[in-house]
Image 1: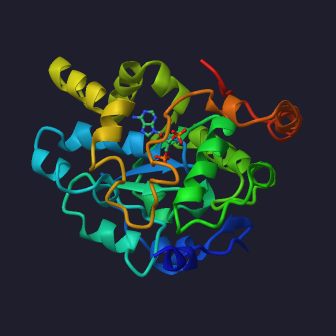
Image 2 (image 1 turned 180 degrees about the vertical axis):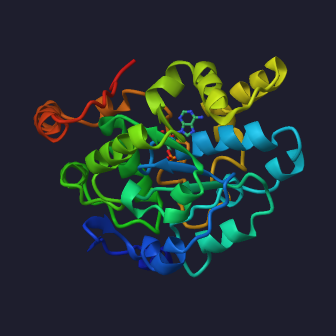
Image 3 (image 1 turned 30 degrees about the horizontal axis):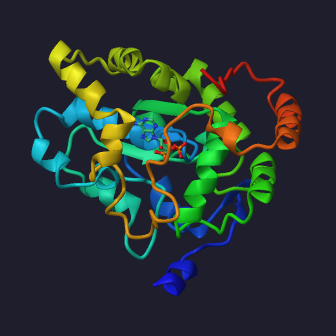
Length: 295
Ligand code: A3P
């Protein structure tokens, strides 16, 4: 029912200095009081940076050998609960509390300052994935078109400017990637990855991830994982492609949309690109982070 779907679309408002929607603020107290366990692994991203990809890699690394049955019957968004979310249908905290697995893989889109303190106190491993701003905003635009628990995106030009102003859900991309990057020197259990590197050489990035996690999969197992997480395979995989998610309309845009570096070139006009670059320079001038917008 299209009207009912549209009624799910939330407003954006300022929450502690970050643009948010009520789906990710309503459970604030419970989220802040979440009790992490030392072996929990937090997967953190700005939305659309490759969360599902990283989640599925970790899921296969830990449970690919032992729980094949789960992999064919439980969607990734239930195996890797989204801590931040609270709707009439689901609560990330409840899902995480009920997770029977060890370790628990838990996903968040929060900026670093919103992460419940027990993750830091328990010295949990954290995997952060960042994606270049241009592809990230294009992906987010198509996602907001098809996902009814996100605000109406409006037209592309307006959307792009709201991204630049940090006015999309989960706030400023610039603050997000930099906030997490600045955490790295003081927190050794943070592994900072880039979407572009994963596209360039998935196997190499899985190796680096394994060395961070202290895992040593066999050659055969690693090959199985590398194959299983290729875009075309994940797109076909109903437990990884969100096709079971009822608040999304794949006729508008599929969750597994393109999976490329450089798709922004099909969206940005020359004028938009110049304005974006100029603004980007200013916003990122104090940052040591380097992104690739093509490979
Ligand atoms: P596009 O919209 O550019 O295609 P998230 O999981 O954080 O929501 O990110 C979704 C983005 O990651 C989408 O980008 C999606 O296609 C891409 N993605 C998901 N799985 C992927 C994979 N195995 N390889 C490459 N990109 C993938």
